[in-house]
Amino acid sequence: MIGIFGGTFDPVHNGHTHAALAVAAELGLSCIHMLLSARPGHRAPSQTYNVHRWQMLQLACAEHSILIADDSELNRPGTSYTFDTLTAMAASRSSAGEDKSPPVWILGHDSYVTLTSWYRWDEIIDLCNLVVLDRPGQMTLEDRNLVDFSAQRQCEKIDHSRAGQMLRLPLPMQEVSATFVRQQLSLGQSVSDLLAPAVSQYIEQHQLYITTESIV
Image 1 (cartoon, helix red, strand yellow):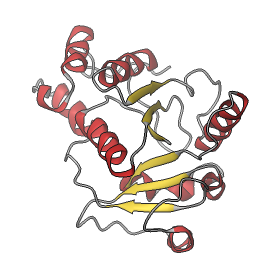
Image 2 (image 1 turned 135 degrees about the vertical axis):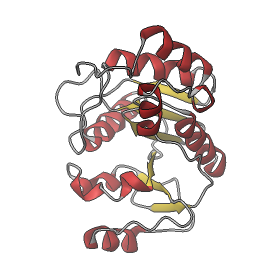
Image 3 (image 1 turned 180 degrees about the vertical axis):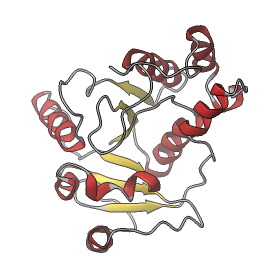
Image 4 (image 1 turned 90 degrees about the vertical axis):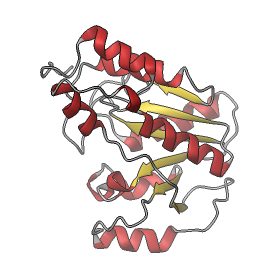
C-alpha cells in the first residue's frame, strides 16, 4: 500500500515530511512517493527552477527510508495533471505485476478545497483513495460540489482493496508553509529549524529565494 504526496515543494520543508510520515504511520503505508509537481494547471507556477526543487526534494527524502522522491511529472511534458499521473502510475504498476491496491493520494486541507478546479477532478477518486489532512479549528468554506463529493465518499477507515473512498485525518501538523519559508529567506532570516539540514545547506549554497528566479 503506497501513498502519494504531491506538491511544488518550493522549498520542501519539515511540515511536508512530517505530514507524510504521520499518514504513513496512521495508515500502515509501506512507502510514500513525494511527487514533485512540475507544471501544475490549477495553481501559480513555482518561483524556483525545477532542477533546484528536485534536488532539494531528494535531499529531504534521503533522511527517511519510507519517503521516495518521485520525478514522474518532471519527465512528462505539458501541464502536470493529477488524473494523468494516477493513470500512468496504474498502468506502470499493472505492467510490472505489482499489487493492484489503489494508492492513497494525500492532500492538505488547503489543497483539498481547490479540488473542483483540478482537471477531471471528480474522476481522480476512481484511481485512488483520498486522505485529507484536516487541521483542528480550520474553517475554510468548501464548494457545494465538494461538500456533495465528500458526503458520498467519506469513510472512517479505508478499505485498501478498492478505490473511491475519502478519509479525513485530523492529525497534528507542523505550522509551517513554503510561502513563509521563502519570505523569511528573502528577509535574510534563518529557517534552518524548518528545513532538513541538507536542504538548508543547498539553499545557502545556491543562494535561493533571495531574488526571483526564472521558471522552467
